[in-house]
Length: 122
Image (tube, rainbow, N blue to C red; front, top):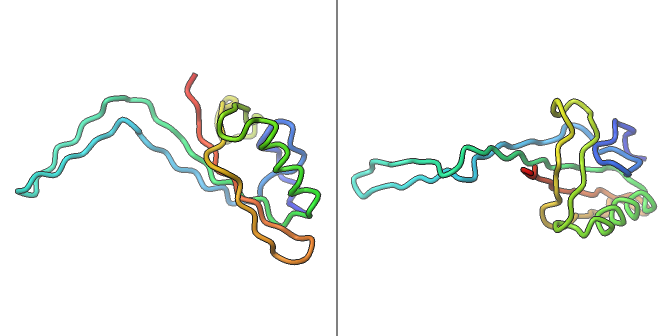
């Protein structure tokens, strides 16, 4: 039932539904506010990280099982896998899962599954 969009994850036969949310962050950025209202900001890293929120909906019970098996096979947030080249970036992007998949039961046999992934700098 899920939209047959270009696969975003190697080895998974279905793609997430659009739009796909993306955030960019500089994790080494710090900001301090002083009592007089002034602030001081600095960076300890110039490395930028990207995060994506993927939604697979609507999916059948079998497709949900496939997504969860894919997550489990890669040890959840502790493993690595790669995006296929699909236009989110010029090159394949190494990513990892962040947290756990979230499932919502929409109707009998119909689900929504949400996954969060983040870019991994090698």
